[in-house]
Image 1 (cartoon, helix red, strand yellow):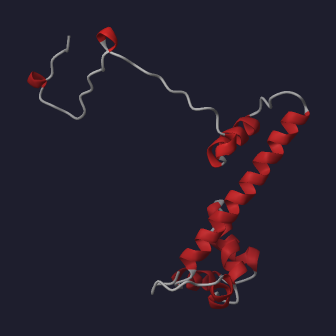
Image 2: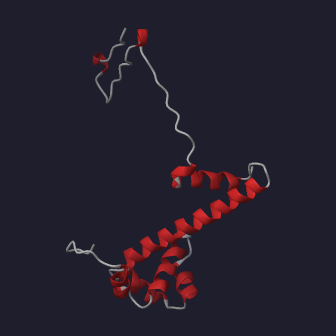
Image 3: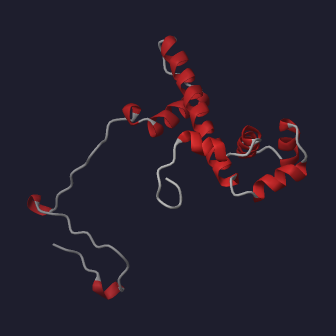
Length: 145
């Protein structure tokens, strides 16, 4: 939807994008990876001044968002590749890369998340456990029996 609440098609969004859209997204992507502004400009074949003008344009935040979305897709694919290699070797990957890949996938794909573990606590004789939330003066807190 646009600012007026009207539905907007993908074609309309693409038509509003600057002609240098892909270069802008690549600069945002490279920045997210820690590349300097000057190196980003060089990588996409524009001047540093051009990159600074892009940052001031209203579409820059959209380019940054798209770059982040693309990074997540890339991370998902790379993580899945590492997991697949580990499975093919019939053993868990003991390297940090394997641990990181599993961690990432467990948090980004609910189907791969570890099972939820719930603990049920009870007070004396199976009753409720009293819980005090927030800070209170020391004189107001007492142990419950």
